Image 1 (cartoon, helix red, strand yellow):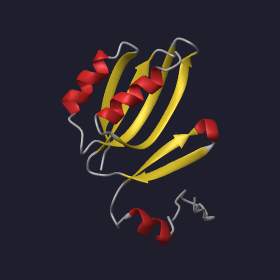
Image 2 (cartoon, one colour):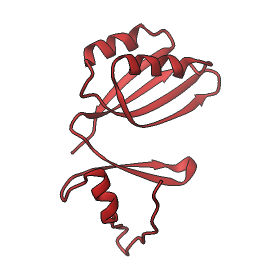
Image 3 (tube, helix red, strand yellow):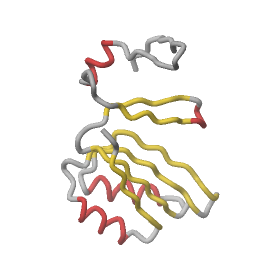
Length: 130
């Protein structure tokens, strides 16, 4: 992982180093998704792609539940960009937040496959604003 020390100005702004922008293909005027990871005290930034969407899965907090959901995503050609999972109610309920490229995915089939999985309680798709 490449790192670089950058400063926050008086208005809370930062400058993403040119080498980082070039490596990720970020151009002037494009939006970037910012994700607050309060638990690990960090902010994650990544470019928003045209076919990138956010999906939030709510499922039973049981061993193997997340793996079953991951298999469904894999079988449906979902290209993961960023994920975060957490237990909401220990041994009862967990949440998996996923930002992914769905350009090679049949969304209706994916939704149907996720509905069939008994451990998944709910699925919410969100568009990322450009």
